[in-house]
Image 1 (cartoon, rainbow, N blue to C red):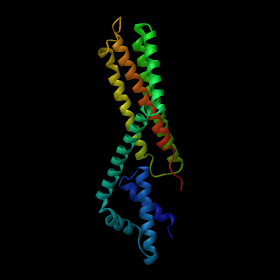
Image 2: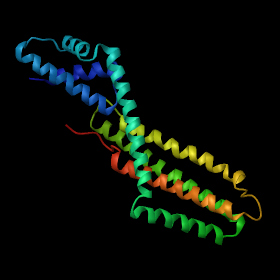
Image 3: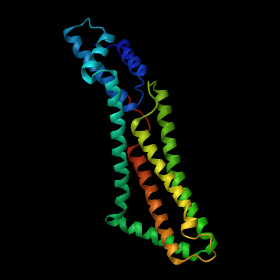
Image 4: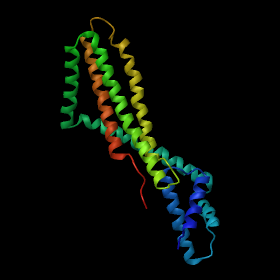
Length: 231
């Protein structure tokens, strides 16, 4: 039977090799303990430290290969959640959601055309700032919440691959924000009279930016881990 000492040995081994992300830590921790429990059935005197080294070698091909396995998990998570963000975003252009997206575009365009021309850029920039800050605040709250819950539960890790990949995607929003700043030049928003085509383009860009922000919020709400699984 697996005791507390064996769990500590496995945990120390994983921490020694910097396996400190929630998903891979739990997977490898369970794998090593389960394999050790199976070995004890036929060889009760098996040393846990020796078993860990042998199991890592036989299952992964050594420590380096095990770390490569961790990198593969991280790369896969990046692809998965990038696709999910894209899926949430494109869902705004299908079925009934298309009506909502179009209504948002019309609302922004009407608002811009009804404003004093010099206030157009201010409104557009305000919407852009909201589109950036709101998702970032949610993601940062989730990051702190997960970290605090890990500490409360005495976990050997404080972060998650899934959460990190989702937070990394928030950089996409900040990249678009920098692009948004170029609208002052591209769409001539510093002119006294702004052409209608400029108002239309900035309305489209602002609507798409807000929809991307909404998509990110949905991704965080549906996928983000706010606390680790409790055994």
